[in-house]
Each structure stands twice: as C-alpha cells, then as structure tokens.
Image (cartoon, rainbow, N blue to C red):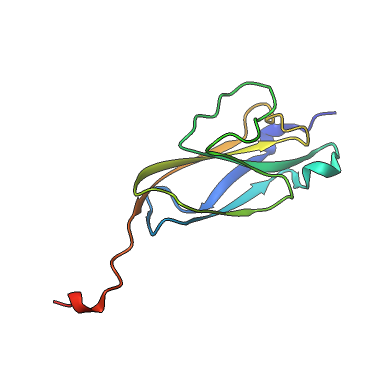
Length: 130
C-alpha cells in the first residue's frame, strides 16, 4: 500500500530561500515529515529518500529519477544533508524531491524549492585592506 502523501512534506532547511552563499560549496540540509527516511536498499514500503535537483527541472513524471545525470543527486543512504561542491557564482535553484525505494517520486509530488545566490569568496590576500 502506498502511504497517504497529503501528510508528507519535505523542506530544504538550508540554504534558506533568497540566501547568499559565499564560496563554491553549498551545504544543503533537509527535513521530512509524515514518512520515514530510509536507505533505498532497504526497499521497505512507506519509506522514502531524498533527491536533489540543482538548476535542473523536476520532470513531474511517475518514472524513476535518473542516475548519473548532471545536477541530480540521489541521497539513497537516507542522508539528510549534502555538500554540493563546485557550484558556480550566480543564481541557483535547488528542488528537493521525496521518492520511494524504487526512486519513483511520491505522488502527489512531495517537493520543496529554494532559490539562492552563490558569490565568489573574497580574496584572502590581506594586503587589500583599505
């Protein structure tokens, strides 16, 4: 039996919408309610795991989330955070999607979206003091 997902939520707890992140690494933390976050390999019913889309649209189709695609990350070990390296300066969007052990997004879609900006870190050269 499929869980009743109207009570299931996912939220990106960091970065916050509108945040500015300094440097090229973005630390993403996630929260979910109404369902157990479990490793995909457990393949237990009524569990889910997180997926992240960075600057990639979530296709909103009931088919498994692809692996090995740029900008799409599976947190299949039940991780609730992810350290995204080499994010370029500029505006970005993260979409978090909950999916079942077969990587099929939970219907109706359980997603959260955050928009943020990455800025290059200030130069570490101490001679630029004003």
